[in-house]
Image 1 (cartoon, rainbow, N blue to C red):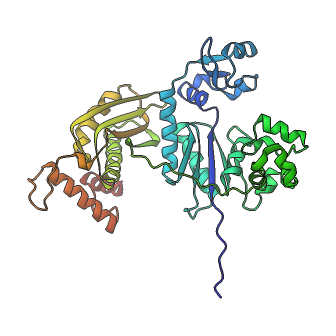
Image 2 (cartoon, rainbow, N blue to C red):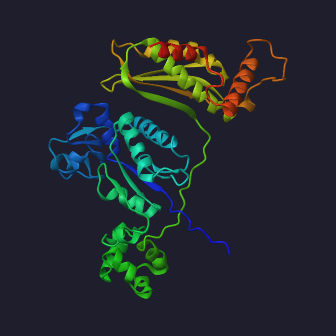
Image 3 (cartoon, rainbow, N blue to C red):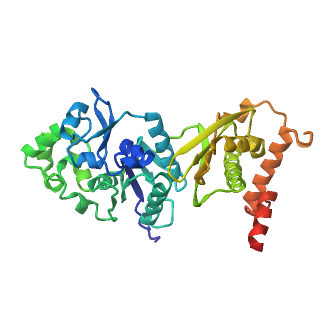
Length: 401
């Protein structure tokens, strides 16, 4: 008789950025840190996001701006810059993609991700993600860690801001017991009042209630609600499969860099790595964007496009050099630099003829075939099987140092 091994608990994490819009504004303008600020309409609108300093004064969302100003006279109102918040959100989720592709984005500042495929302890992985978000974006983020979506979402919100709450496997019900019935899915204010009227104020009241009693408040939802009260939730993390609109990579340097050649080298290495993914996806790209960040968090960026889309990094090197000189204009070192490749199109849209040996030397077709062959070598023999001359020179210089 073959023993059946018990299934390993899932490793689910819920991320919830704290006061996201307001926090982004405080990152971009450090003088706003520690102050009561809110993002929204300046006069007749509503508060879309309030810093925790403002919340301590009673400011809430979606409070009318006029009321917020009366409650907190020192409140600093900032008009929303939603395109910018979208960029920060994208960069935040790109960090998570380095750890797992199984991500379910619930909103601009919130989502689940499944780390069950990783061998490392989930707390260690979630901590590494949190640390990278802090180092790269300087955003406060709360994490809930557990075996299912229900407990992780609640855990991330229970002790904000910057909470890191772990619900160990097997303790889900105990974690939920003392909480208000309003924490459970499907229980809003109206349903909560109906449950209160029956004396079912807490999660443990719902778990212990006779099903017939619970049905008086929530009808046919009673059985499912009781499952949630027991901490049972089998809902999967559902990843949205989308065609990439761009490919990007950025690096925050260990020490601020002043050497132009060194920064250019780092950017070329990022470009090389992105092109491997682009070729693997069967895509071509046309537009290169370079972004740099100074020590004071001020950023600059610029974009240029090729006449023809490409999937070979050296085609973009001249643009990279030009763009770097255009965006790095201040006499300051750089804390971060990054590249983004956009205007993505599938290879089927590119007119090419790729017979085995007929390409003219130096033609686009021959460059693509050479790059693809190098990808195959790296895949089969390791990343150092063949290296660009610049990397070999750099390795030699390091050895001599």
